[in-house]
Structures are given as structure tokens and as C-alpha cells.
Image (cartoon, rainbow, N blue to C red; front, side, top):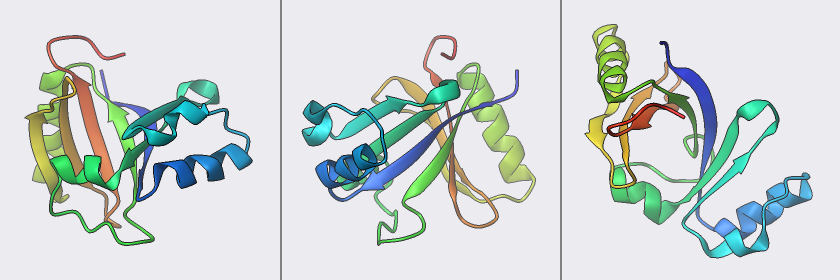
Length: 134
């Protein structure tokens, strides 16, 4: 299997303010999500829009520059399993792309890695640890 484009991630300094903005654009995100550190919203066609607070993002990437503007969004590609995360990450780094975060088993139950595209955008690779991709 090849990785499947799965999600767009937003890193936010203020979850409630970010969600309020996207609600004004028509996304039906419940108000109860305003105080959560991580929020997911299913989009038409099966893609997901994800929000993480600065604190959540720094918990696994303490060196990230989280200023305003570019760099606060990322693309997510679901892999079939943990081995595919490792393989694809290795292939991209070997091809000359910058590896931001080498594969690791994240506390939220996924094998996770981050590679930067040629413009410096984060591209996340992930799969459930010990199971098949969703």
C-alpha cells in the first residue's frame, strides 16, 4: 500500500478562537471541543481537519518554530502499518528530503514521523501501533 492523504493539521495558540473561526466558515464543531488540546473534524470525502494546541505540538516537537504564519499547518498521510511509516520516512530522507522527526511510537498509539516538503511544510506519516490503518 502507499500512504493515503488523510488529514490537514492546524497548530493553534488558542483552540476556542480557532474553532470559532472555522465554525463561521460552516464547520459543525461542537462548543465542547473549545477546551480540548486536540480536536478532529471529518470533512466531506473522508479527509479530516485536525487542531492541536501549541502545548500538544511542543510535547512531541519541542524545537518547532510556532510563530504566526507558515509552519502552523501540516499534511497527514496514513500508512498501512508501522513498518510502512519507517520505510517511507527512510525513502524520503534518502532521496534528500529533510526528516524533521524520525519515526517513533507516540503516546497516542501511532507510529509517527515528520518529513519537510521542499517548502518546509510538515508532512506527517502515521499508522496505528500494532494494527492496521484506519
